[in-house]
Structures are given as structure tokens and as C-alpha cells.
Length: 369
Image (cartoon, rainbow, N blue to C red):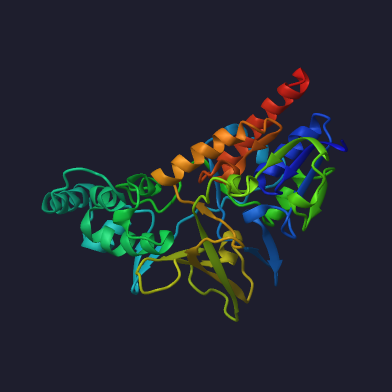
């Protein structure tokens, strides 16, 4: 065997694991079927603007170990994510906070906002929280739900909120302070010059082959395989297809210095076909005379499209459990990352998982397992 590790996928998980195992003296080959490294965090320079090709990626974490780790490979610029929502021309702050409630209802204190929500909940008379709609209503009341959640969520997941599990909306912050900081994490920012430069440094000294399919390599090329693609695809969908949501991106260069005044605008009405517009230069406080925007259109996933979001419901959870049992028949393969785990991880969680898995791999290799 030529390599100790074949790492399928040059995204954050694959790059971190490759770095860690290479530093421990193991020979790694990283492949990716795309023509670039960094996975969905890939950034590229276009007319002097760092463009996030696959949507906005803002790094945030409370994990000091992960923060120290990524700072080995990049300097972060301190960008704070403060998106806004556009509902038919009405502008609201995100996440839901006192600025949102003040704009929505004309209130000025937390007590007034809570009283408004309480009065709407009393009218709704929710008995039990069984789906996303009921969960959202219980958190912010009818008005915020109708203007800022219902349409956006329907577009994002391709189904009404009533048909989605309650836990989906729990990721969305709601606070009764005048704080537009979307994340509460202590450490936040974007690598200066983009994520591609950071991942390139992670992969220094590691052999990387791009535009390469896993199936095209000899089966005995490495002692161990780390697979970061879709777990159901690895097994040729033999138990059925897990569900994902995909995205289509539409970018445009504009001859204006500042198009929307903020990095991210969510369009929350159902009539607007895209969910958000990203203006990339704001991620790095750019002052270029031109600007580049990207519209994100959610779409159903099918083979041949990129999978972005796992559809975490009971049906897919049951199928995932079966695939994980099947994975036990391949002890030579480790599945990791968002797709390999079929889990919607944040970037810091992906890195933490890779670091933990690298420690496990090293211990197993030393033990001859």
C-alpha cells in the first residue's frame, strides 16, 4: 500500500485530519472530485473581492482549543455577523432581538415585547409543540412567525413549517436585548484573504489530487480510508437515499460601491424565489469601487447536485441508523464531516470532530488495530 491514509474530501474535516496525521508521521493522500480545496468553504478572489462561492461562512466558536488551532493557519478579521431580514420591503434585524420587536410592534422595553408575545400566545392557545410552526409561534408569537419565519423556512426546506420537526427552529437565536450579533460565541471572524488560503496552509506538505473520484483509485491504495462524502453514496445507496437540500447560486458584479449595506440580507416572503443575498466585500470591510452579490436559491436535491443540508427527520434518522450499522462492516473506513456524519455541523464542530478523530486514529494505528 502506497499511503497510510486516503482522505476523500479536501474540506475542513479532511484538511484537519490530513494535517494531524501527517504531523504524526503518516503518509496521507487527499483527493477531491471538485477542482479546488476547502469544500463548501471555498473562497476565490474576483476583482479583488474574496467571494464565498458556496454561500456565507462565518467562523464562530467558544472552543478555545479550536480557536487556537485555526489561528495557526490564518489571521481572523473579527467580522461580526449582523444580518437583516427583508419582508416585502420592510427591514428587520436578525437574530430576533429588541431591535426586531421595536420595528415590528413599536415597543421599547423587554417587558413590552414579552407582553406582546404572551398576548399572541394566549390567542393561539398552543397545547403541545409538535412541529416547527408551533415551536416558532411559542418562541416569538404570530407576527414575527408570519413575516420572518414561515416563508423563509418553507423556501429553505421545500415544505410547510407544519411538516418540519420542531428542533429546526431552535438554532435561531431570540433575545430581549438590543444586540444584532447573530452569534453569542466569544471568538468570531473570517480568515483574512478567505478560507482557501487557510486550508492551503493546513495541507502544506500533503499530497492532494483534485478532480479525482474515489471509485477511480485502486482499492488497496491506503491502509485506512477517511470518507467525508455522503455515507449513503459510499454504499451505492443500497438501503435507499438519504434526503438533502441543495442550493443554486447566482452571482453578479455591480458597478457600485455598496449595494445593500450589509453582508447578508434574508428575504423572508414566499414570493421572492431566493432566500438571501450576500454582498461579499462586507465580510472583509472592502472599499472597492465594484461589488459582487450572490443570490441563494434553495432546491430539491437529486443525484448530480451538491448536497448541502441533511433533512433531519424521523424517516431519515431511521435510515441513517441502518447505514451506520452497515458502516461497522467496514472497519477500515472512517466517516466524518457534515456529509459523512449526516449532521448539520458548524465549522468549529467539524474541526473539533476532526481533531478528536485524529487522536483516535493515532491511538489505533499505534496499537495496530
